Every structure is written in C-alpha cells, then in structure tokens.
Image 1: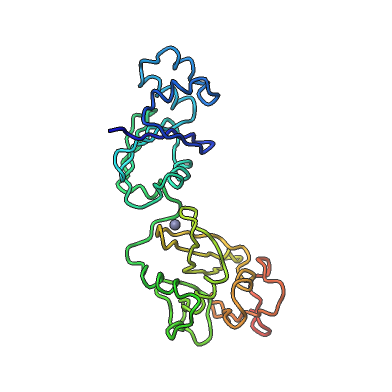
Image 2 (image 1 turned 120 degrees about the vertical axis):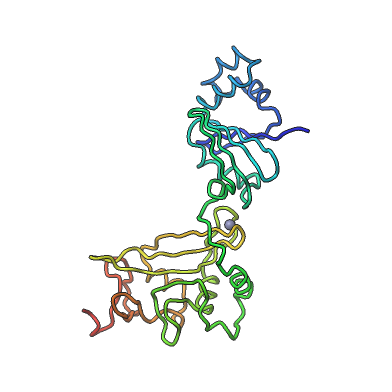
Length: 276
Ligand SMILES: [Zn+2]
C-alpha cells in the first residue's frame, strides 16, 4: 500500500503531495526551493534520512506523513504551525478528531496532540455544553419569524440592554437580524460565522474596544474579535427598532442613537441629563 506524504513550505504555504519523499527530493533537487540543501542531495542520494534532515533544516519545509485518515505525523525543524492550517484546509484535514504528532528534528522532541484541532484549525475550541442544536435550528430559520424569537438565546452574553428583554442575553430576534445583516466567514470552512455574543466594557480610564464573539456551526470553533466602533457597528447591523436602548456598565446608561458620531473617542452617547 502506498503512503501519502506532503512537503509543506512554511513561508509560502505551498504544498506538494508525494508517495515517495526521497524520490521527490531527488526529482526536485535542481529547484530553487531546494538549493540550500542541494549539496547534500547530490552527495548522499542513497541516504534518505540525511537528505531529509538537510532539507527540513535548510529549506523551510516540513514533511507530513499520513498514517490513517485521522492520524498524521509532522517532521519539522523550525516552527511548523502557521502554514499547517492553510494546508489542513486545502487538503481536507480541517476537521475535528485528527491526531497530530510533531517530531522536532532539531530538539528531538516529540509532541502528541490527541485531537489536533488547535494546530490544524483557526479559532478556539468550544465547551461541550454549548447549545449547538438550538443555534443550528435558529440559524436555519433566520429569515422566519417565530413565536419564541423574543426569548433569550442561551449561551449568548451581552452588556447591552433592550427595554422589555431579559438582561445579559441577546434575544433570537436580535441574533437573527444580525445573522441576516453580516457576512463573516469561518477561516477554516468558508461558511458564515454565527454571532453569539457582543459586549462593550469600560476600563478604569476609558472604554475598551467592543468584543464580538462568533461561532462556526460546521467546525464548531469560536472566534473573538475587537470592534473599535461598537455603536457604529451596531447601527450598521441592526435596524433602528432592534437596537439596544441601554448599555450596562457601573449603571444602566441610555444610548442616544441620534448622535451621528458613534466612535471610540466619544463612545457612549449619553442621553441629556444622564451624563455623570
Ligand atoms: Zn468552521
């Protein structure tokens, strides 16, 4: 049975598949890519291990060996991970449950990742308790109005408030409007991410950036980003009737949406008489 290997070039993110790494090196020894190790490839063509070490050390390549469809071994010299995610996406390894073994030829260290998500996938892992099915169902029906859309979405978190809605949570109605309005894709799967939470906190002296948390319903990873102009972002994303009325900080502060500047410098547009 033939085995599958990939050479990856970590700085250019290029990858080459082969079933015979040594033959691949010999066949490509005149390429510019392998120039730093060419002398070794010419001197020791019958010593695969020496050739490989020279190439991994000098040419910025890593070698991926596929053991099974859920197990890979990565031999490398330097830091291999940035390009690994691009490779995983290109060749279908951007899925959960892949065991990854890193064999560092420079240090002799072997690192075993039972589930290699964190090295093969962008984003962070999500705890098992997240209500995936509820979000999948609501996302499928995002264009429909449902009787329970006024309910709070479990696992959502916000410090914005809507009159008449439960505090600290987003309602499905608001989430559906956001899902409809925005298109942010999962870097692993290229499918739309689903916003779950957003908030805006104040530090000791000034406002911090807003935080927006989105999840991917396919690879089930979590992505958190800063939003420097959270009110402007909300104004762009939500129609006026669905915008929050207040922000909960040390107190509940009304938001005045009619003030045109909603930027970071004058973050909360306090309604008249509320400034303190
Ligand atoms: Zn994804």
